[in-house]
Image 1 (cartoon, rainbow, N blue to C red):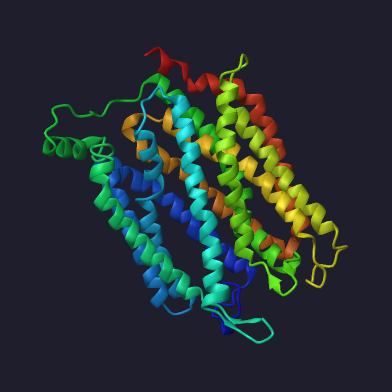
Image 2: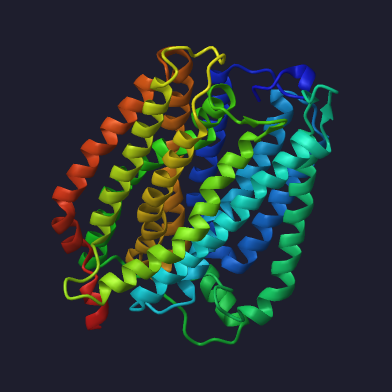
Length: 432
């Protein structure tokens, strides 16, 4: 979006590009709520995943053929928003459907592995996309400077792969999943599908119990803290990338490290440390003191995330106030910041997904996971605004503000931890 028009970009300002990315991603995550409701009441998870992955592929095919304009890009983004309604939350709900309501440890481990799998794709995605856009399909001058980027061919790759995913799910789900997550779990859709399957018992809609209401309240409270975390984390998709492009030393000899590769660094760290963190939680759970509570883990994650921004501020300080690109900060600051950010992320994201799946009533499984992703809706709106302010207020002031807010709310979360654990009432699952 910020690349010059002559380079096959849109030539937008940092502020406008950040706002578009933030708005698109925010609406995308908000759609998970509506898609979750449709899934729980009419489609079932398996059908939703097939539909969502197909629409995802279709959206990128549209972007491949669309003109390089804001309107052309939005034509594909709108379809991606609809696709996300039936894809994001449903995958997490599917993971939870594979385990019983009291299998807390197995669910935590499963979501950690799921998170690792996400980041395997997120690691290879930017690397392959960077090669396609910056190397294989780019026009490169004799001096090594990129004359034009091959962005459209990244869209084509995504389109082909995601349509292939929809076909894969359609063909393999009957054998690998059977009836698991095949039918709606709520309302008339559940009755109809169950009748077609020859089932006598149907999950009837029941009013929420007092315990369920308390658990939902705990989810709402933690939701606020999660929004703040993601607002900071999503800077990796905007201000971090711009910072790395302009002020970080990425050239070593004749080779310049593509910015997407640095984004992929976060993913490979997740792949490495997700299973290690899962083992750590299991080990703590077997100790005399027991595992850390969910709020405690999240507070720790927010503190680590805050420290990542402090590291970047220290790196920017080494430039001595020269921010026109003529001076470059060491890439080591970025690598350390991403390490701290990743460990913080692993203390919050997989833990939060597992928590929402544990606490939500079964009949609202997909809707609950959609609510988890709704936190990203608010976070992206805020994150996009923050990223746009870096061009006027400066990186140090914005990053410092983000770090300070995270520290304050981490302390608040730690203070509230016992009350939140009481609201969750997880022990009642085991007593049933």
